[in-house]
Length: 415
Image: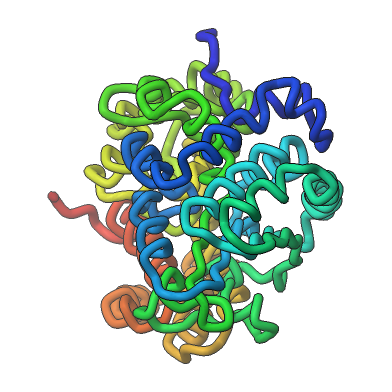
């Protein structure tokens, strides 16, 4: 097996939640470099081509730039650790096993935008993450580093660990803002974006846990080093949550741009004995399914998008021949129906109806009218919600209808 490019996971084996051990492994060197030239940080992140690892792959430096340029002396940096989507388990590993690189990255982000509040917004169902992050934050509060950051920012900097609502929708960035303000995590329409007006109306930078975990390494080693870790035009490494019908499911840190074939067959040990590959839910259960013809795809944001899907969080849920795609899709749509905040009737009612129809199809009790209703809902629901929940639900249903029509009893059509 090839040697893995472990930047984020390797320290987890040796460090845990001990700040001194983190420093012995080179921790805080990135922060020290950042303190010497905070005005260069956004450009360094841009040069590294760091993308948001929470799903969308949006350029991190552009978010930082927007928050840095926003008016206001009181700004927030929020680490979004609400991770709750099926098949995704990367953030909880970083938060519980190597929290200091996340904290250091968040402090560097605070330097870049001159923020005085740093909040770690964590899923309360992940008790290990909460416990270790609280321990780690307490160590930083007792260290001289926080005072150095405060001096550079020009005002005291506070660190907080705040449990989220524990709801799936609570990870959407405007819902994060609503939750931190003490309200129900209802998503809000954008604009304004949180970087302009977030928590209590202040500019708020919200980054995923994995995104912030990479920051200290980039500042310490340089943008060229980070870019060279990727394959082809892709930069850096990615955490891939591999699950489903494979011999060795788990969390793999690999070069961004590793092929889907290599992830499954080289690192994941291949399919379960006697099983053949059928499909993969890519980036979690809300994207277009990839099939055998896509095994060559490079797992980076741009290459996966070219296959009409999304890399998302890097979750890869592998399904074997003989498994029902409709059954899996029905499970995931049921999850979305329960996770809907109920603010948008089209989402709450639409996901419920999709789940109900899929259950009928899966049980063989459906009629042609049910299939027609399923297709009609997929046409009218997209774009009807304040967040992307309903769009993601429709995407995976449409993908299953198009890619596996025979499972629905529909004749395949030529592309």
